[in-house]
Image 1: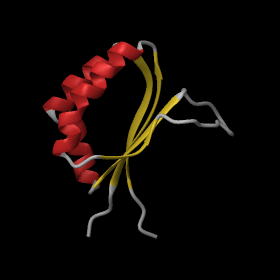
Image 2 (image 1 turned 120 degrees about the vertical axis):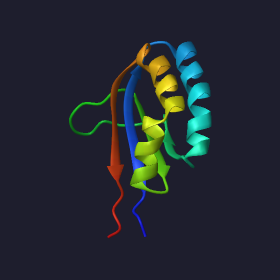
Image 3 (image 1 turned 90 degrees about the horizontal axis):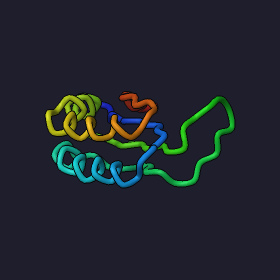
Image 4 (image 1 turned 60 degrees about the vertical axis):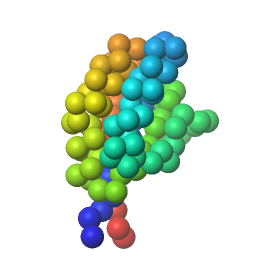
Length: 98
């Protein structure tokens, strides 16, 4: 059985209205790849280091699906919208079955 894959995004959104267009545009690729939001914004506390104000964690059935979603043409089009109004980091990581 393959391990789950996760996107962990930490963003500073400069324009909430345009960011909503990104959210609308990413809905289709996320549905196509079975994405499940575990964290989507919400209250957060930075206890060590530094972080941007918005954190998102998205779960996929496998690491391969997480990568494929990111690389899909539909997500890349959505990403172009996000890049114009948000700075931060997005990592794709394989889950742990301990």
